[in-house]
Amino acid sequence: MGPEDSQLGMERRSGVALWRQVADRIRHGIGGGTLGDGHKLPPEIWLSEHFGVNRHTVRAAIAALVQEGVLRAEQGRGTFIESRKRLAYPISARTRFSTGMQHQTRDRRGILLGHQQEEASARVAEALALEPGAAVLRLETVSEADGRRVGRATGWFDAVRFPGFEKAYAETGSITLSFARFGVNDYLRRSTLVSARHADTDDLENLKLSPGAIVLVAIAINDDLEGRPIQFAETRFAADLVELTVET
Amino acid sequence: MGPEDSQLGMERRSGVALWRQVADRIRHGIGGGTLGDGHKLPPEIWLSEHFGVNRHTVRAAIAALVQEGVLRAEQGRGTFIESRKRLAYPISARTRFSTGMQHQTRDRRGILLGHQQEEASARVAEALALEPGAAVLRLETVSEADGRRVGRATGWFDAVRFPGFEKAYAETGSITLSFARFGVNDYLRRSTLVSARHADTDDLENLKLSPGAIVLVAIAINDDLEGRPIQFAETRFAADLVELTVET
DNA sequence: CTGAATTTGTCCGTATGTATG
DNA sequence: ACATACATACGGACAAATTCA
Image (cartoon, rainbow over all chains, first blue to last red; front, side, top):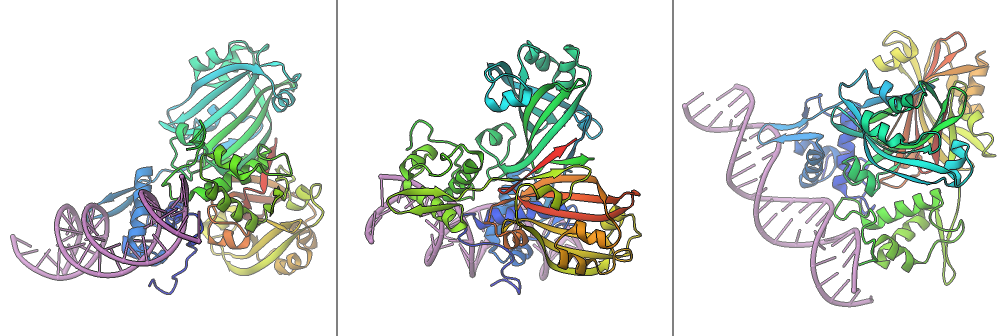
């Protein structure tokens, strides 16, 4: 069969199809720069020997990545990398989506998917320093940068202090500008909790991801300058498009 | 043909077997507390209806999780959760692995897998403020907490300033204590870059993960108190076991 | 320009794994 | 445990488009 390195980490009967494992390795190799000279992918035959799988399996992997928009195949010429760099999203005391992205991309905006006034759960109440059951406003949003959906957020706000926040957000497309309408001209990031998981149905749909994709989950609390919490939010970022930078 | 919620995120022909998707969801549900009352998993029939798959598929998922050590099945009684919470790994100016974990776990240590003196690549040289090609020491390590492998790290150090660092680490099992032997009694985290990806071969082996698992990747630079970089490291955490907290 | 070499695209058949009932 | 349907993986052969000597 394959060359000397017949087993390069491809796990048979593991519940993950070989073509998906190969696709993940190719995608990762592109990100790390180890695969491809930046423009052209090695031929299918070379890849199939490199990974120790059949050419058809490599073709299935490539087909998935083409569908994903990572690769572009041209008959007779080769397969090319549709590369785009990861967006860096900084986390620091003054981190906000708008300030973070503005130096890297021209067009960025937040889209309001929906909103709802509800009673604060124990978790939300604690984060916002309210009584459990207090009226809070929940906003479901998607963030776009250069036309690509990079983040999907669920945010909670004190409904008493910020009535009609959803209207402000729908008009401005920015949390920062919306807060400004309520007299909050600056705010601080108190804490951020970062984890990662497979994308669920909602993520797949709203971030236009393919099954098996990974999301970075950031759970954050923002305070106003007096130290009172004004926002509790969980944001899911497409891990292929975004990386988080922590400046301490 | 499950109940009304036949589609709960289970993706057919996605390259990931249904039983593995169900296993991932159960593992995630346990971590989030949404599945099981903390000790016992719901019956297989309930799970099969909940996820909209056949009972055989749920059984395959449970068998995999039992093999993994996450669940324990007892004939006639039910399936029980071998529970453990996610470890929180703080990132802040004074973050170190040892200080971060010490309040959550009794037994923790770092294991030296291997070391090598090599010439600094452009990336490493820039991070450590050395000339490209300068002698650097690379350490490959695994971090254990309560007997579970939670992190796999590759670290680079100035070979001139820290000769024999690998011996210090092999003996102490701690970066902090190793630095202390060279007169560095404190140091600061300058920057951290966080991303997520699927586990590769090395991760699967060294963190004892199953294929399809996710790793959180943290790339960090540590400075001494004079602001000179002393360590450049990339750590891969098992995303199922670890979450990162950012205090700003 | 011609023809060989290279590379992707399509078709066949067969064996095994996955999912359901 | 059995039966059925579909997805996955492999092997081979050949067509179609491109490159280059």
